[in-house]
Length: 200
Image (cartoon, rainbow, N blue to C red; front, top):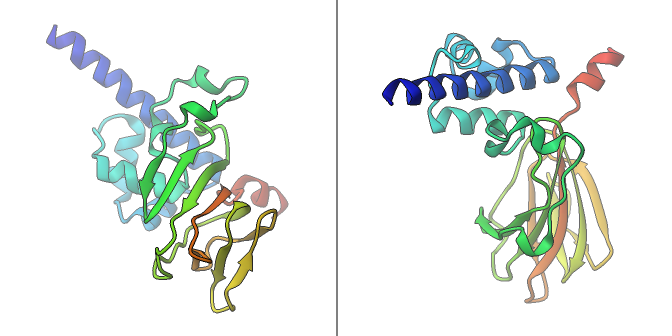
């Protein structure tokens, strides 16, 4: 029995390692590039990709953040997104994080660059939470009024039907205005490194 469990674990680690390697190559990164972005050593990352090392949750979270993908994408079966992904609204669980309520609108994995979310910015949250990450971000206001501040610019006020598209590497804040929650569709996209590389 133990040998069976050990064998399955080895297979799973190799599977996760293959996904980590594929994602790094899609981005056109070297191990050194990933090490710089995650503060993990090149040797450790190499062992993760080869399946020789069992990754810690903290290491996987750091790598997922560097790539701008959900942690779950490292464990999804390849067949899950062969054709496409459908997410039923009633089945998308609402989660809480960074003072926001959100639901994933895709079960995206390494195949997709876009990360769509339905986000509620609660009223009274204040203007203190600053977000910043690699890639682009696009948002569309579904309800309420949204205060959007990007970098040192003045705060923009967006109403229902308004949209904004910006470089997410700029520090940005989201605030519900007029004493009511604001609800938005937010789509984040990692920098398309392969496309950029093809033009350089």
